[in-house]
Length: 210
Image (cartoon, rainbow, N blue to C red; front, side, top):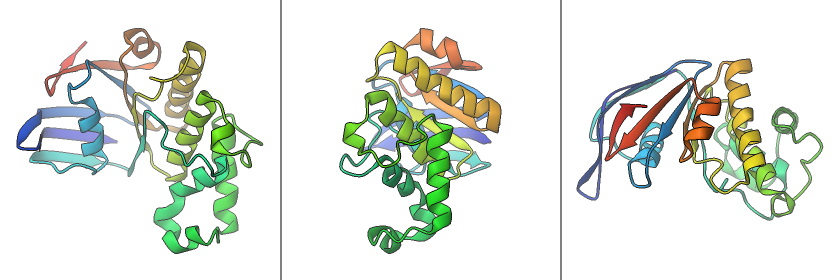
């Protein structure tokens, strides 16, 4: 699902990633651990195509969807409308701006919410959801993109332990049940050990096995 060979990224004239090699298979969860500033977020953003690559190759068997640390939801939109944002690439900006969502997309958004345990909460505004529920909406939005490669950047950093475990179990379940590849960055080794098939550590832009 993902194969990276010799990936090098430079930002502001400084190398941030140094010759990264990494493969993630369908149905596999790989956890990236390491201190802040080690390059974990840059790696995920490079895979998603959000930062330029200086050298190397990124091969994806599927489009990638990024789940952000702070979920990046529009507070005044409903959970359903936030999920529908994941369909922008298919239906275009203007139809979304006019809220002219096709019935098939509305049904898919409801199904995505159900898959993350939020069935029936589609009409609720994002700012009236709990932290754990908001992060689940962010995962549902990623599913709406129909990506089989999920990139989760510290998805539980702001959650209490119970919600953190629930969100990580959700990601683990999506890998097992649907064959999605999951690459997740985490600060907490105990949580990484809970869900990951493999654990890697990043320091100063280089990857090492745990």
